[in-house]
Image 1: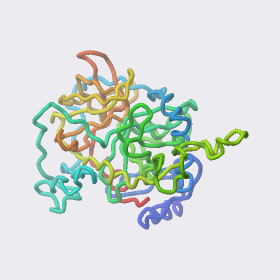
Image 2: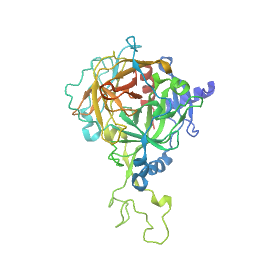
Image 3: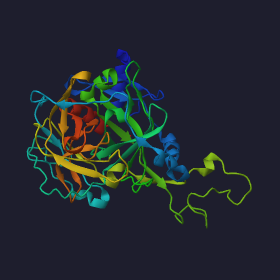
Image 4: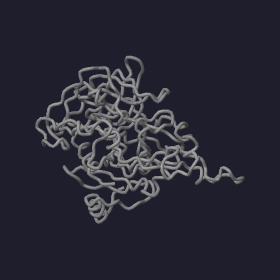
Length: 400
């Protein structure tokens, strides 16, 4: 939904200044011209700081009932891409890398140095070399988890997602349709109650729940539902988690999640049933963030790490060499495919140069569709080009 010229200028100013865009419930607030002339769609505020607690509580209350009832998200507009007849999509500029960074527990100072040809600071982009991971015994990363939200059908759903490096340690990458509802014939809107839980397993949030703050994607995705641009970067608030029993500020002899009026005869209210939450800090500080690779030639070995839609919360991984793919039925030509694939959940990250012991690499794809089974099982991702990097740059610099 394009803004007026005055609105575009105002929104661009707020992004540069680090101020929040004006809130209109669950809408896409507009597009802004950015580097290289590409348009970036920026959502309204998904949840304010004051609303973050209630959003996290929605998922955690009653023992995580909403989390446990969530199902994999499969929107109506499916994708059945096959190997392209030509070489597929290719670079629209020089190749570039953004280095990954480890979280505090993984000794953040041990993050990768800047790649050869980079800026030498270890926190920027460079046109350096990228080596493939040697061992296929993958140690699964703590950056990967599940994004939970209320789908277009009004029910709780999930997608895979991953933390990525950003200037403020607050950025998550996943498939665009795991953030935006882009059904044909309707205006694009963001999905409600969006949260990211790294390391999620059976209702648990080992490193906290991170409530979505604002989302960034390509204008062509929210305007046309363009599968070639089916990706999104979501800035998140600092994490929240239930306070442990016996922690400071906890009433004596009372479990952390027990309503204060349990000894009385009146039933607890919804507010009293909400878990007592504490701040767990920034996402990047807790789990680190994957790097980013763009404008790479197709064919470099990648590892796909994510979840299976066929049950269970355990992460699955598989290696493969991507190939050009297309789905003529939806006019998607800028895709890549990879087989065999075990992690079929939307939003599963594709990582180049992955190092298992450190759990870090370079994000170079995101599953948006999955076809076939067994040896023919094929995951599909948008090709990561300079336009994606432009969207990422706007998202990584935004201050929550």
